Length: 130
Ligand SMILES: [Zn+2]
Image (cartoon, helix red, strand yellow):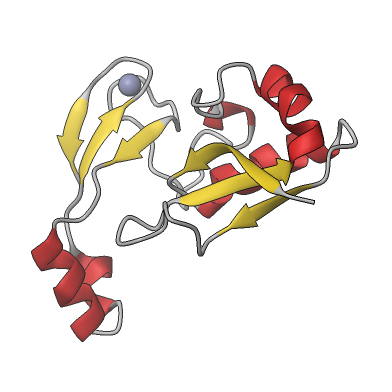
């Protein structure tokens, strides 16, 4: 059987939430970290069997629509970034630049812990660096 991607997510957390959503509807979904989307951005594709793809897309609505993180993340959960303006957890981080990716690899990931990232709120559009 062949697997098709029904969405690409920038965090494992989001991809897992989508898998859970699909599995609740009896669709076997898996995360593909090795696919063509992965690369430097760390994007994770969610894949389902081709036969389930139409149903999966229907369940997910627009295949590219992001998961509403507020359904999964408690306000004030420090593990996730929240918008400083409206406090939603629906925050996107800009991908690392190529230079920062190299720095991260050379430091075995340590550098990423100290890097400021450009963030943008999906709900109110507020952008900040943090
Ligand atoms: Zn906001």
